Length: 230
Image 1 (cartoon, rainbow, N blue to C red):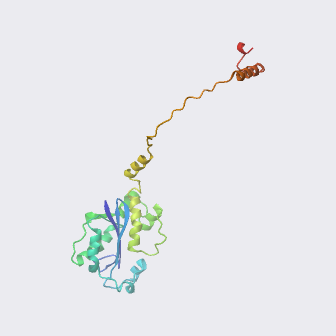
Image 2 (cartoon, rainbow, N blue to C red):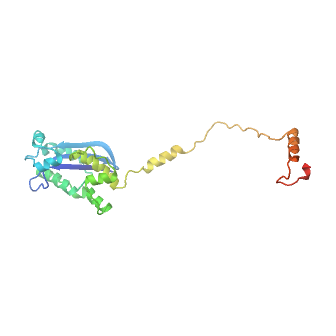
Image 3 (tube, rainbow, N blue to C red):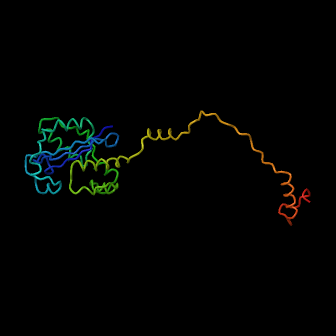
């Protein structure tokens, strides 16, 4: 099963209030395993970056000044995500900006039936706990030491590991197990088998005589007296 884990960075909290998407990071998973294929892009937001948003992701007006507009890369983005389910943390936020940008440039929006929200999954699995991406990374022992600011592709990579844990963790597939069992099965040899004659371990007459003489020297033996030895 192919899925796309993605994250966005924006100028604020609401597309309808004039905020825009400035970064998107997507990675491909097949059967909950990352394939190494990614899509990552920055966009010029056609507006200034609020200081509070810049403190979150570190993307300044100067950095974004020469970046393409969303319509310039929309085809590449749509080709990458295809018709696969889209996994995001607090997915309604990311879907809101993605669909807002798509609608703004006259493209069809992504259906909400494709949405997989890891926040909702975390609330079901860990009720009452913290459900931020940082908190879930801590819970599952996922290294996030390199995350000094939010970044769309970096957060998508962390989220992909969290998503695997939320869906049961990594398990060896039955196919792999059967292959291992097959490899461990004993093999039959076609080489001819040589049968050796049985070895006879019989005491010599002299050994029997010495043994009988020794037994006569034993006083009050545990096995009692044996007339044959007297």
